Length: 86
Image (cartoon, rainbow, N blue to C red; front, top):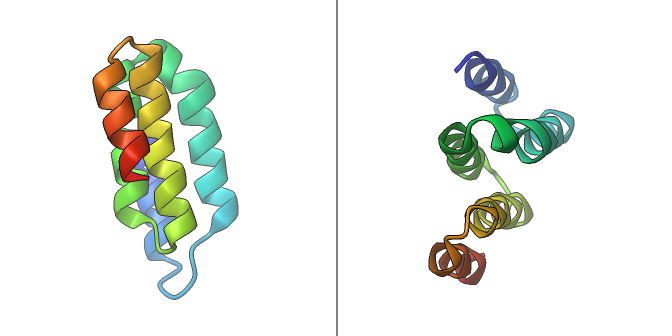
């Protein structure tokens, strides 16, 4: 939760342009660390990344993160659903 609060404060402080470094840092940490420790939390973060994404490419990245997480958990139908949305 603390991670999400930090992320949202970074995004809200940058009203007109998204901080790509912050986005990519959270993306990587979610993919490499959080998903290994707490799958549900990783999915929530991926969803939050999608919600705050200001460009189509970041929205696609967020959806593909969700697709990858579902694939890793063996939920192939959900994985395909998110990959198709992206």
